[in-house]
Length: 81
Picture (cartoon, rainbow, N blue to C red):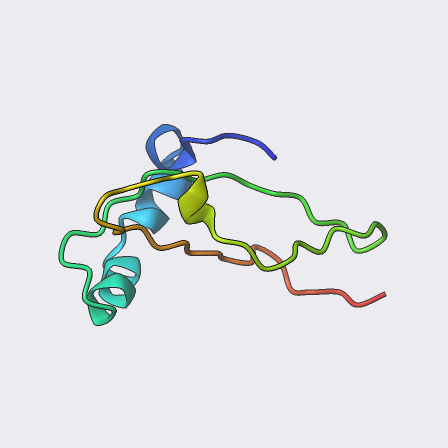
């Protein structure tokens, strides 16, 4: 993993995470003011087992009432080995 605030520190991440396209996706899910709170790049190399089982990130980023939504974006096409 690299970074935990790329949405604030990197121009490309900032532009993407605050783009109208991303905001529209969240608004379509009834989020009125979507705001990025965490971002990172995770390297998932197909040569190594790196599957992550189902889990809820709300245990790590807690809000009351629950108001967070995870948003994953693949940066490369998947390669099945």
